[in-house]
Image 1 (cartoon, helix red, strand yellow):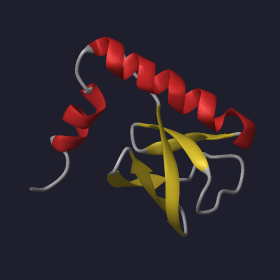
Image 2 (cartoon, rainbow, N blue to C red):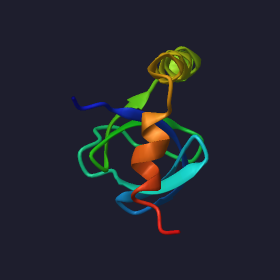
Image 3 (tube, rainbow, N blue to C red):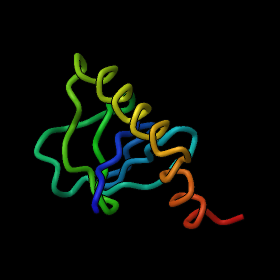
Length: 88
């Protein structure tokens, strides 16, 4: 199963953004995004690419939905996936 993950843009450097995912920061490519983004915006990341900007009025609902999914899973699969990618 593939899952797009929401995150907040911290910085933009050309076609790459530094994005915060629940305290874990990763570089995300902006090449296929059709709208301009800036720090503070939220995006949905899939496989290292921003696939859409989350509208300001949808951010809280989107984050709440992901929190519910993570709590229902009984563990945090996103944290486990990111932990495997982040150097110790």
